Image (tube, rainbow, N blue to C red; front, side, top):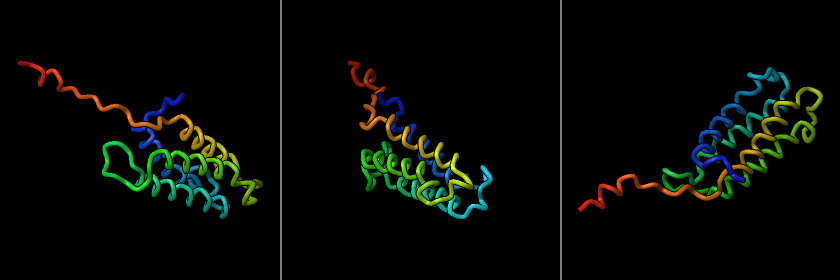
Length: 128
């Protein structure tokens, strides 16, 4: 069941990118170099990928939405596992794990197909 609209996903993508980019200072692990660089890099990558994704109401972009959602899922898994992959789990792991799982959830529950365009002026054109 995909309950997150693509329009909402756009907003959440940019918010998640900014949150990831700023999380070392928000959550107090800026002293842990590997942990800091992991989320800053992933946040920057997420912002770049979001900029080049073909969302509705935008100029044609390079990355189709289906590929974007697959990348989101992979980024989320990598982010959730990063404290153990890069051996900084003794310093910090919870923000990476929670934000990674959230990213996977966003990828799984976002609609893949665009919403139908509603034409509100049909009554005007159908008058005699």
